[in-house]
Image 1 (cartoon, rainbow over the protein chains, first blue to last red):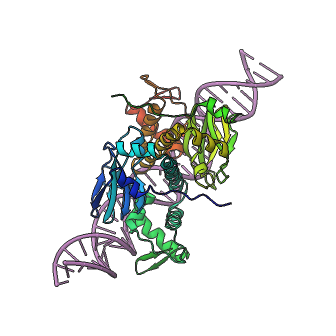
Image 2: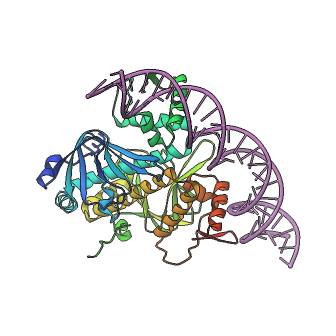
Image 3: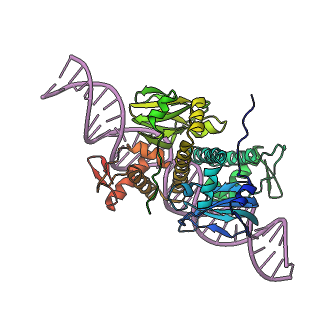
Amino acid sequence: MEAPEEAKTINPDLLRVYGATSLKLQKGEIVFFEGNTARNYYQLVSGAVRMYNQSNDGKEFTQGIFFAGESFGEPPLFLNEPYPASAQACQDSILLKLSKTKFMGLLAEHPVNQMKMLQILSRRTYNKSLSAKNNSIYAPETRILRFLTQYKKDSAALCERLHIPFTRQEIANFTDLRVETVIRALSRLKEAGKVEIKDRKLYL
Amino acid sequence: MEAPEEAKTINPDLLRVYGATSLKLQKGEIVFFEGNTARNYYQLVSGAVRMYNQSNDGKEFTQGIFFAGESFGEPPLFLNEPYPASAQACQDSILLKLSKTKFMGLLAEHPVNQMKMLQILSRRTYNKSLSAKNNSIYAPETRILRFLTQYKKDSAALCERLHIPFTRQEIANFTDLRVETVIRALSRLKEAGKVEIKDRKLYL
DNA sequence: CGGTTCATTGACCAACCTCAAAGTACGTGG
DNA sequence: CCACGTACTTTGAGGTTGGTCAATGAACCG
């Protein structure tokens, strides 16, 4: 018995048929800010976007990062809530943008995409459960290791030795730790043979 | 312009038509364990269920708590993943249980419930974003206060002064703090006039 | 070569956790 | 009504871990 394919994306051509426009973003540009009203559905064609919160004193927490093919920021579209976090391109990116009304029309007329959205939102919730668990009951080293392992799994990398494309600061923002703590934890993980570090590049 | 009603529940009668059975649980009984395979859809008729993770040394983290009318544990049904947390009745409860197959049939034949599920899962993800933010960038006092405020909002209590039905330990498990920290923070919040405490009962 | 970004290290500190003990409320059963 | 057990709350003392701050080093780029 075959596992059913898990949907990760809505057909870009279908989005375009419904009037989606392309949006080109440079690394660092903002898609929307925490507190904004949600007016559009967004899906990545290429590049990467991260959603994050910022505290008054500049500390950041990364809620998640999204890559080519993935959509983000849908929940506020279905609720009448403002965005709970900001979204920023963390690489040069291209994304498809479809107004809320048109997106709802698409779902209504192509119900198969409702099931896709169910899977997508389920995956989102599931991942958030895992990371909440991760960042609560584990010590820094485990936290980081689990984060890296999870990333490796998501990236579907089957290679022995995967280069981790995040800076120490980015890992810190994901795991709710400080840079220095991440650095010290990584060097212990390296001693323990759990990760490799070759001229500052990190491998798992 | 009227805000569309936000769906929180699937019609219990419809669930029964599709063969849902009632399940009576005493306070403390387990619905499923972290790691179990998801085979059923669950929805509360009365009582309350909490989802939580436990660490080796007995520390607990509460992912969420669900009340009458709410469903829980759906994401693993739509993915092929084991439960990321355990579910336990935290009051005597009655719940409806419908097998995965039948539940999927219900959704397929009554697409309006797909949209409901989209809202339910959106709300779930949204709340998880808020609580992740809460538990990461804020100091203990704020964390607790925001948790209480969020609870008050969810409970739709319009009263001036709401009795908080959680023990200090439960608040600790939600906010990822220790009991003693919660107690000390609460007494500071009381001094600051942010909460009321009258013979150990907590009010917001 | 200068500037920028990221990584690293050390010294110090404070916040929260741990542990232990005692107090309070409440229900049960004699 | 009282004695007892249980669950929850509270307080204090002390310790540890991860955070803070400051300085330096390494890589990269135009």
